[in-house]
Image 1 (cartoon, rainbow, N blue to C red):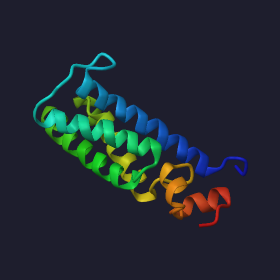
Image 2 (spheres, rainbow, N blue to C red):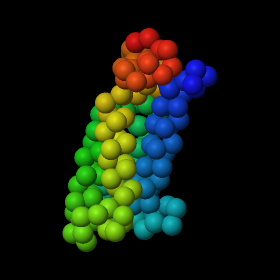
Image 3 (tube, helix red, strand yellow):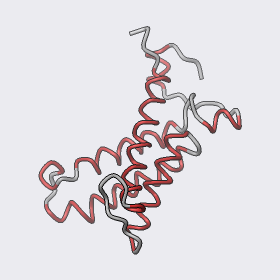
Image 4 (cartoon, one colour):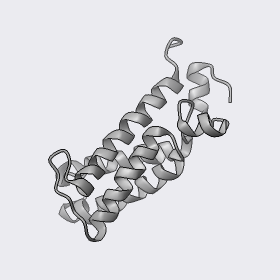
Length: 140
């Protein structure tokens, strides 16, 4: 559809997923949103990656790097917390970890995108996936 611009939708995807991921981190770090503050061990590390990485993804500030780290964290979370209960994500309740893992891997491949703090500050050129060019008529 010509009237749909992939850059706008990518920005919305990046912002919403980053903010939701930051909320998971806020649960672990601050006990917000019905969570419990966990101030030791790997949960502190996970909470920091989720909170600060989620904010960086949402704001579009080094979103590619933050998303790559977040993707790795979600892979580790899946294999340490969910996979021991069985290999099928829907059965071991790991589907959110899998979705976040691959979503952040995609964001890592695209970067911060058009509507980002990184682009506004440094005027960096945008890495546009080929399918964005084909569907929205964008030029790199």
